[in-house]
Structure formats: C-alpha cells, structure tokens
Image (cartoon, rainbow, N blue to C red):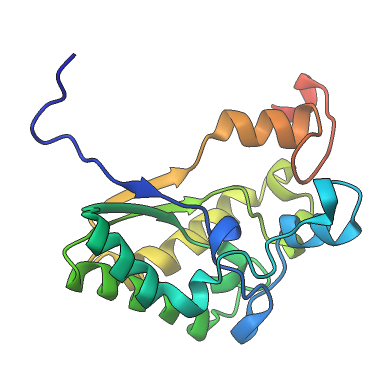
Length: 189
C-alpha cells in the first residue's frame, strides 16, 4: 500500500495527558482532574496534574518536534482551561497558551491540527448533566466559537471530538473512563 504524496504524517497528544498545570492561570477542573483525585479510578493513583508539563515547556517541546522532523502536530484544547466553568467568562491566559503554542508551531514549520474535545469535559458542566443534558450542544457551540475565533486565522485543520465512540462507550456505557457512569443505551439517545 502506498500513501498519497499529500498524506499528513505527524504526531498527536491530548491536553490532559501532556499539559499538566492543572490549576495554573485560572484553569477550571475537568472530569479527569476530579476523578483522578478520588484515588480509586486510576492505577497507582496517577493523575495529569503535572504530566509532561507541556503548558510550561511547550517551546522546548516544539523545538524537539522540529529536531525530530515532525511536520504536523495534532493537539487538543482543554475546554476548562479556556472556559473554567464550561461557559461564560473566558480565561484569557488559558486561551493565550494555545495561541502561543500555535505561533510556536508555525514558526518552526509545524502545521497545527486542533481537536476541540479529547475527553476532558469541564466538571462544572458535568455537574449539570454533562453530555446527557440537552443544553450540552449549546455549551459546546459556545466553547467552539471562542476557540475558533481566537485561532482560525492560523489553524486550518479542526477536529470536533476525539474518538466519540470510546468516550461515550467507556465513559457513559461501561463506566471504565471518566465520568465513570453506566447508562443503558436508551438513556444515551
């Protein structure tokens, strides 16, 4: 099998898995922050509080990407870093982090590809019913508008939700991932 010449090779990350800085600069809690703190969901009590500390070391990380020859980087935005309560007041410092990251990638010849949601749902919205609340589409639209308005002048490629079947299945059907809930299929429609 041959890949087309325009196939985009690259690397990817998820905000919760790499950013760390889980309470830095006004970030709100997400469901992984909350459930990892409980200590009984994740092996060895591990969490993403520090992770790779990409939030504080993104320039060095991008430099390493360039040295490795990476030309495309798919990363996700932490919704609760941009909107700490899921809706309402924008956390300008959180949004600035992503703007600075995009600028750093472009300055190093790396194409940014942005995923809006990679499983780290804002805790404040989860407490209002999360994705099972009919208002969740409005909440997501508000969040998406904030991010797209801030970054679309430099970001060409957007993904909405990373692996929705995994998030829904493992988070809401079998309860293996945050928010660790088990619902019947009829509850999820």
